[in-house]
Image (cartoon, rainbow, N blue to C red; front, top):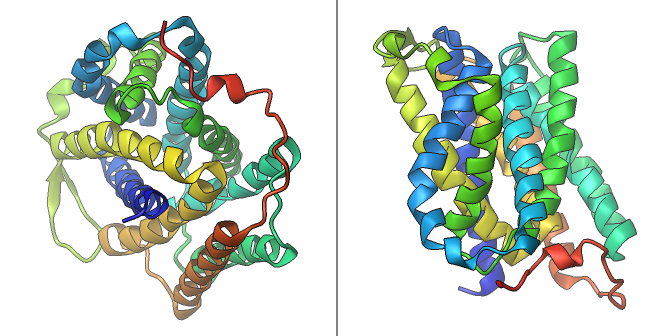
Length: 321
């Protein structure tokens, strides 16, 4: 498997994990936890799980790593997941995801204006088609039930932070392993969450209560199980995987491949939370997958212009001191 192909597989797998995390987090929120509590516990748990990897790589840290790691921690971890959990508590997951994944447009604009990366016109048209397909997959039927003005604002803010996250991800220090690169921003984000939602404010005594699922499975899930999934799968593993994949394929490709998350998220929300998909929505999913494939093909065959120096380039691969 080539370096690029491996990156594609890694990013798609990570996006699948992120999609499942949103659904499980909504179960926890429906079970009585506050969205900020879910986000904080996710960060705390992920930071603790990855702490050994950060400590092993500690001697490799340098001053040049402070800015990229801190920016990624505050925007890509703290703000992004906090806004997302607040959004899905006020609207259906599928709609929140499709709004968040308009992010490839500002990322592509950044790639074009800042880095001079050109794509053929039909590739940009395919991006529009992909987003239209996602809109059909969510809005083309009765699947969208919850929608508030505040939820829309939060979802669009989440989209903005996600776009920044896609750009900053490949600029994390590559001299460390992916788990250390994921753990360092999680630790910093944990400090921020400690100010907003201290550990002792989380209702740990209620973790034994169960939450009934409203989808295809007649099950009741304990709160502790949802938190365990969100922490282990949706934080420690998913963040490390997405960083490793984004470094291999670049921010633009990662953003387009990331559009598999709302597709998977809509399907999981249908099965687990009872948000049914219509034929129009299913067609939207197919349109999105095909359009993303077209864009990826265009990127793999693109003809590069002479490289334009990026003022953010010093953040990419800092040498340890």
